[in-house]
Image (cartoon, rainbow, N blue to C red):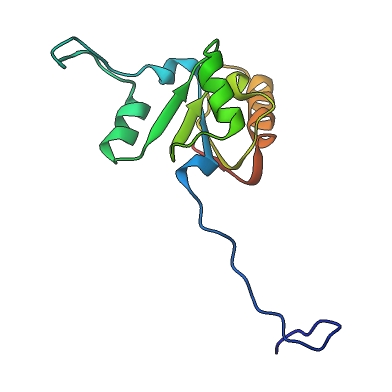
Length: 134
């Protein structure tokens, strides 16, 4: 059954635009934001965190936004031209939103009250869906 508007014309069903990597925040602790370092010859001298290594291993483009990196934060806030997942801690992207937020909980040793606050903080960044990785 098709719905009709006041003019009697059939309304065409529309699907939402597909998600882009730029539509996603991946929020985690600052300890997971360590990327690999290489020397001048391209030899890895310091390994990336497991999270970033996993994203790179799956060919998922990402951009790490760290506290104090005002240029990267400004680029994210204004809409980066790069189609990449923004990986950050929640404090770094305070006030910014994305359609999908993936939250990787922080240290398992913190109290449940702190975890609840962190989850609420992550939820407030999502306009469509929150994914919690436990």
